[in-house]
Each structure stands twice: as C-alpha cells, then as structure tokens.
Image (tube, rainbow, N blue to C red; front, side):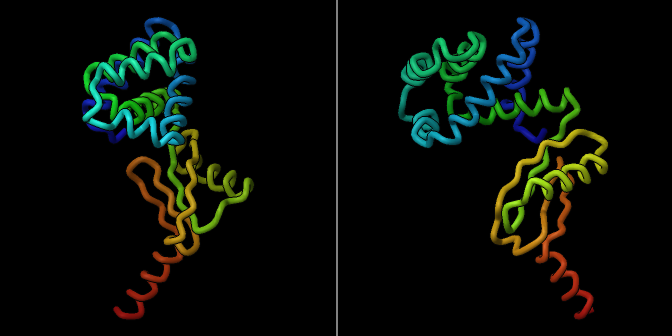
Length: 178
C-alpha cells in the first residue's frame, strides 16, 4: 500500500480495533459503504474537507448522519477522525483500511484503464491473466479513459502493464527513427 504514514497508522489502528472486538466484517462493510457515499456525495466530502468548519461541527454532523446505521466502532472512528481535525482524510483512511484487509486475504487491487468499457468476458480474461502473473487473487477497478485510444493499461501495485495502442505506436516510431 502506498499511503502516507498518518493514513496508514489510522488504518492499522482501525483494523486492530476491529479484530480485537470481533467486528471486522461489519466494519469492512461500513468502510465500503462510507467510501462509496463519500465518492457519490460531493457535498459531504466538501463539508468534511472544509478547514473553516470546526471539528466539533463535523463530529456532530457525522454523529447525526451515521448513528444507528453503522457499527459502533465505525462511528467512534469517524468521530475520532473528526475531533482530531482529520475529517478530510476519512475516505483515504477507510480505503487504506480496505486495502489492508485485502492484503491480509491475499487479494491485490488492479487499476485498469481502457478506451472503451470492457465486456464481462474481457474483464474475466484480464483478471485471470493478472492472477496468473501475480499468483494472487485480483480485484479489478476499471476506468474508461479516452486518452488510451485502444488497448489496456493495468497497474498492479508498483507494476504497470501497458498494452495500449499509444505505447505500441511510440515503440514503432522509435524503431523506425533508430
């Protein structure tokens, strides 16, 4: 995981607390839901990132929004982040927490960029190939990116697999020029 140290510390702390209390699965579901909520709700993300809004106001808002809807440990963690002035990085910390769980379970994330949406069988084929290469289970996150033009660019950890038309054309240009 390539996270700043403060993000990693909070994520590890949440994972250890969830393991100690036996609510890891519930907290994982909460984290997945909260990350999705923060991605979809620009207003909430902006509210939490706004340095002008006081920490106590953010803590109170988090309490009102999520009380009774998520695990008590998850809510306490959100309030802790808010009270320490770290509300702006809640989504990043929760994503790092999910990555820690995935690492522990032997799952690695792969970010895939393509020019067009992949069909289900193309996704499965790509996932199978990446799993054979890494020797681990792979969780694909796909993104359509018109700048790719064609082909696939996949990142697994620090390794980038660039099978894009852009790269092939650049290699061809270099061979012809060289």
